[in-house]
Length: 309
Image (cartoon, rainbow, N blue to C red; front, side):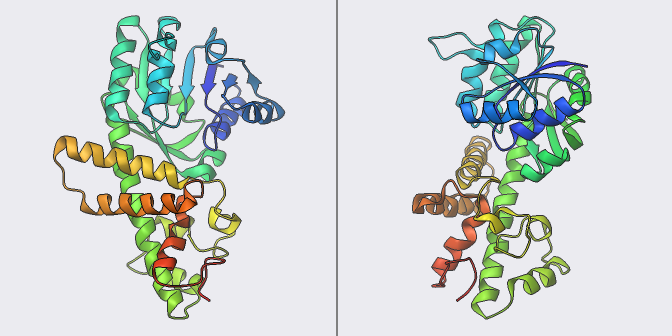
């Protein structure tokens, strides 16, 4: 049994923390949202009144936060208050599963090393369903020693663990993956919208494409049209899942990185623009698969329920 502090109980963090708890580890969780803490306690998790309190006596700290600034503030401080790294004991292992800039991950890793604190960036893929089922993919950046220490914990939350390279490499792999995911979702949505504009049943068309050369993960597990797959956010009002604004953030990280290394990512740039327009239209809190609605609107379709009228 490992004593773990879990910081961040959102759509992804909460089920991840619960899987660690159910695996027999001693988990103390914290989130800034009182409702998230109440829900965690109802599920049997111990909670704390602050991030610092949660980390008292912890052998490992796992964080799942929205953006780079939150991670840097948590571990390094914000100029007015000190960060957690100054409070953690030497030998503590920090696993950050947020999706942030690779430069931010390296910054925290560099600050942790002189204190004898292990750090790996370990962003995830697999969505809320994967988080609940414990089948996430972890993309890890860090030393071989720290990655080896993290594996027994990550294996309780994920089915696929990849060591991408040194600190920051996990984040780089994640933004490449999510850039592709954003492009795939737009392409799949566009094709389905075109079919519906021609009167095709989206469920039939999706199955045809799934079994043909256009087959991809979105058709397999995350169809953007309501009613085609009952378990998807699309079939639940685009609630939960992975918010449009989070996809927009990740596409922005990919474009920032592409600029820094002078890589050409024209489709990634276009995907970012389309998601930015979708967010500005008021859909930032909806699951990113709701982009199909904006594409249907561009085609002049009625989009009351995501199907052609």
